[in-house]
Image (cartoon, rainbow, N blue to C red):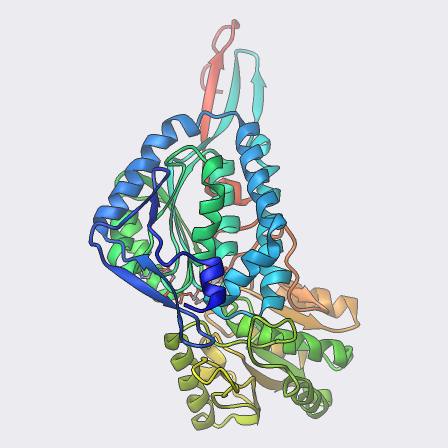
Length: 495
Ligand code: NAD
């Protein structure tokens, strides 16, 4: 372990079950490595079905009292969690950076503040979990929004705290559910540290964490009869498995999956601003962002100029040690992800794309074991090629030319995904037409990336279903009950 790893992490973490940190039933562990230098950060438990069952049972016991707590008590706990996170932004940002390789400027400016802000948003919602009242001569008809029970959250490695704590635990607890989390096996140390700090706020069993491989714990977690909902963020193949598991007990799901979002640049756009958006989309979080605008469609009238300026800015990006504030591009989060991106770099060349800049793995002096990849532009890409249709999840952007609004809309929508999107134009009517015609869950106009608390995150088509981070998320964590109370007037019959 390096000095930084020793400062922030324990040598080994247990599962967090029923308020205790416990060893896994198998006794096996998983080694977590720093993707910048390949050194060990810590060990986590390699969970199994017995651990999953224990966690769900603890959550089911806790639900009996937690579901009846005063909404203001739940609000207070969530608000205090947000405060503690915000009070130690620099520490939690460094943990995410060591664990995942994301540049500290990304974790300090996005991951931790966004997680704290979204938790604070959900802290304002327990009193807003409401139903309606209808008044009839002979009765009152009420609807109650009730918590579901034990909710399972399964989260990916690219935004560990944000996905687990803000987007999943926040609404689950606000609505009165208890929660079992299965974080990604490659990056979960900041999450574990956060619950070490916040364990005193939570009655035992309200939040439980089982670490380990999804293949070893996923099925046992999702098919347990006490589980009432699963919220998943991750890849399509895993989503299909989880939907099958969820069919065992017919439980509801929310699915936040991948993307291949279209970023459309019109000929009347502010080119510098659009280039900045395309650079941001390529390098932010090393391109490991589900909603990144990885298909940049540029109008033919400005195509050559745009590609040249894009190349100029992207090739000047500072790549290196992610713990340094000047670094804009860190290493990919894991060897598996690094290999996957490299395979797409080879594929791009074979599919006839023009490599404008990048196109291969990078070596950073002093961090020779780091999993670095050069920021890459593939130009003159055809929309039906694999690099334009499949999620690469690295610092790689495809640029495609267009000349007609309907043509580019057809190309933008010719994707199995529909998560994000961008439009760059100074024509408001055109912006509106694009925004309304794109088959996607989010459209940004004249910027790319802007996450504000309360803004829904979620997909159309194979990017999933359900919305996270917003008031409507509470609908996914509650069920509606009708209560009819008879009054004194004679019953009116059916109508
Ligand atoms: P993944 O599907 O490999 O893993 C996600 C989680 O599922 C991990 O915790 C993993 O351990 C678990 N898992 C794996 N097999 C399982 C099984 N059989 N049963 C239960 N759980 C299982 O995805 P990933 O590689 O960690 O994440 C990257 C993907 O996540 C990308 O496709 C990305 O676009 C997507 N993503 C989407 C959003 C969004 O909001 N839409 C946000 C972030 C990431």
